[in-house]
Length: 460
Ligand SMILES: [Zn+2]
Image (tube, rainbow, N blue to C red; front, side):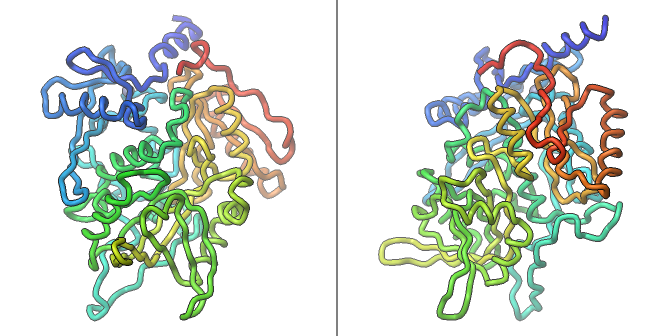
């Protein structure tokens, strides 16, 4: 087969799709779970084959055979009753059997910051769930027993470990893991406007959290509450999670942040954190004054955006707060006071929730979406700047490993050697002309054309 023919064959095989075939012959789309109208139908499809011998499968082929998927069930408490939910997962060790455009594809860790961890920080269990070793304790230890205060969030790339890996996962690494496992760092035109429906985003994050094990006997989903605008079940879920955390566990709050301000209170200055949609939750989130300073220093792009009026913000800011929680009441209404021990932020594009690390990346992500492209945003996790990983990977070019994209955001002499090193790396690993780059400083108005899409117009 000629190279051109082989690429074409690959393109057909690697076509982006979130269609799933069920043993009874029905087909459904993973994205239905994120759509109010179709989520019930999707859940019924999964329930019907949970625990059955016949497995659903995606459209990927591995050695000529469809790649099977597993249906997982989880039960959570909601307003005092057990509610069950189902989600689909790939089988352990089969992440690279799935095509780059498939939602079950697991990118090579070496192609994101995930490769920067020491062995054992993320361990895949036999059932496919991930045991992670966090640097923030989730258990609140009694002061009398010698409490060690939670370590302050580490600065990215400041771990001082040189070429060695990170021995624990920071809270930022955890947000990246959640985002990646929920598929929220992938985009295709088929996703459409679904990321604007917070309930659907929450479903995806819950599925991811239930497969992450931060401590013995508990999954992350037991400690994680998602805050979002217009999510009917959200407030009841937060109350339930807060109650089960009690005085013993810290709660993880995840949502889009609307404001982080320094305020003056009776006991001195404090940081007030406002999540988007939080009013419906009776939620008050505060931290000490130093929290504001830490976040301003570590996440300048996010804090700059939050300083603008909502309509002027070009990005949205996702926040994860690890906090102790106190459940109280205000008349009839249940209130929750959260005191933040550690908080991290992640900048995302407003409509797609794709993480972007700079204004240049925002330009590229926006243009990719406008042009109907499919791509992955590899995340940095806790890796130092020495780890080379692409800023984006196009998944619709027919290349088996996708097409890496690099945005050079500096043009000074000190950076020249680094840039040359990256260029040499991509050329060696992917081949000449099989990767894309833009020197955003030298040629801010001249974004090179993106590598061509294979397989005709995007399908929705
Ligand atoms: Zn697949």
